[in-house]
Length: 583
Image (cartoon, rainbow, N blue to C red; front, side, top):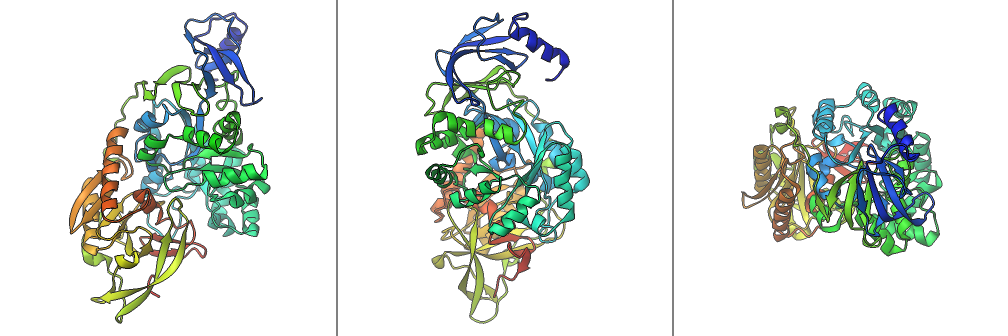
């Protein structure tokens, strides 16, 4: 409760001594604790639930639920708001009408751009949004010290400071290299979280059984990097919760849930997250409600699917006294749903206020004022010229390392390829689907450019670029032509960040993301239209990936096997070391 007086008021209302603020009568209440669905009437006072059986209590206002199902608001258990390309306020228009009333967000993107100042700015511009925003406090900024350049850092002192904030819910995802490499600073961050009664989140991609066991000994309690049920089962056996992920490029829900159903494993330790999902996919599919719907289609009961979207995450993150159920004392975050299998809320209540109706946000959200510095974070030193992307090689041909990517996944494999050499440099070969990939340092610190090769984009000509590139968020660019790669970089410098596509030395499309070089200040509909337009251009150039710019944003990640690319060069993820692109 916010105050003792409010809590006492709830008690008086429950005893019939004070009127309710609102009574939603004639509903079928989904009880995620018992699994029952029963007729009820939900009484609300001071934004909290007083009772789900409040028919006889006096209320200042009454709403007829029309026999609809009353469902607790959904929880996204792990998300990077910046990866939606939208500010927290503009994201509300997409996720709240879909029923998501709580985000557990790791702000590592803006933190990598601008450190504590960036994190504080993200929280500031999120004030007044009609959903709960809890922080999974970024544990690794930078992600790969010594292997990448970032704009900001969060050391132990800063992490301890943010963990003490009221809306800090956990220590954010910590990759295996920090624990298995016995990094003392990271163990101190984990212990700092536990001393404050908060948990530590995992990021356990590509571990053997022994490594995973050792990783769990480091104090990590969950993982969102499971690709299939074998991954999930290995974690569940060790007591790690599985945050089942369904983003734009990380489509893990179906294999994990199918395997869990077939194996008869209970769902108590399963919960849902999007991690990274672009606005066009949210608009087309939905948000957490899409995952609930898919779980039901795969064979879960509606109540069990709803539990995975609400109570399970609330319990795991130790906030079940606040959110996750329609029980006394919790925030009145309520979805009214006609059909549990379709899971399209007709009305959404947040803290007892109706904030969305018939798929549309109706809450008024104050538009934030952005500090000038956050709109000017892209400072290019090199990368404007085609020659900046040369990969030196001798002879007529060069044997090179190639990052092999896969649709719907962020993991990759290391391959080799043979490329022609022109003017002393290894050249991309679109006929073999081998393109150049580069990361351009964009903070004005050193002018580093890392260049390697990639297979799987399918581009036959042109180039794509993004200033959203995990986790350092330098500019990442892929192309069949060096001049087009340079054109994309120049376009993003001019736009102060964003996504770009070029061909023939000309820029064909740009989606500006000037807020930290990560987010647009425009409404969701406008951002979605621009994203679809440049994605369509990418497909005309031959790219066949479902979400090419999301894939591009992850290809530079130096913590997901097997390879990553930073401004300092090609990273062997398993060895946590730089290796040469030319063999």
